[in-house]
Image (tube, rainbow, N blue to C red; front, side, top):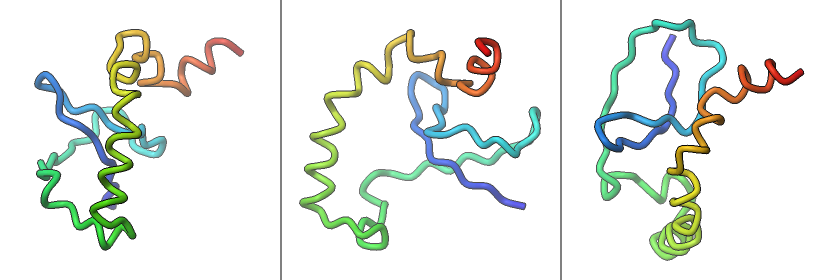
Length: 84
């Protein structure tokens, strides 16, 4: 079974955009680096102008997403379970 999850490479680490819930801890992974210019926007229903607008709109969240406080969401389900 193959499972694909998007992510970003920062400071020598890969940060996933979502944590798969059905993958056992310790599962081996293969990471493929894709340059942003290699992404087929058309297959995603996005033209270059829409991508430019999206990039600009999401840039305002970059500092928040990268802040140390946001690490609580790295394993949100486990953190939520502890609070209930």
